[in-house]
Image (cartoon, rainbow, N blue to C red; front, side, top):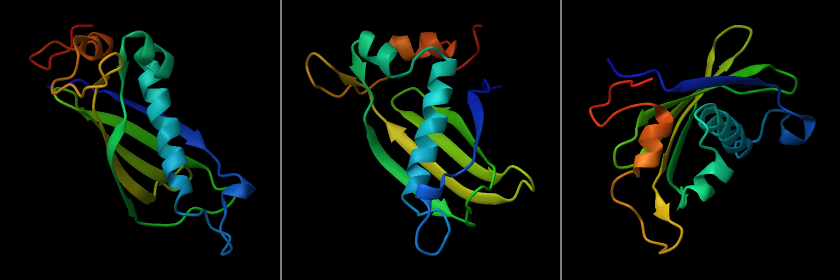
Length: 144
């Protein structure tokens, strides 16, 4: 059984996140995904400062969003981030739901690749530090 590599945050969009139609502007969803991704990686002690300290940058190379519903000002939403691939790339799936009703509002995925900071070369396999921080072995089993 694969480990549960997920984390969920709850947020409420700010007034400045709205578009002229009084709903959250589509580009702000990326910000919400980033907040969830950062919280997820912090859970495993591998957020931005720790990535840099380990010698790797992890740029986003692919980002896909599917808008299913809309988010309004003051609406509480849950953003769930779950790591689904970690061998050759870091792929995270996201689900944004209404905190009150559970209705799905947005689905997304992001893909990041390891980049050696010294050489600026992309790594074709995720470095061992990622596996260690996630607490999984090369067979994908939990070692924590």
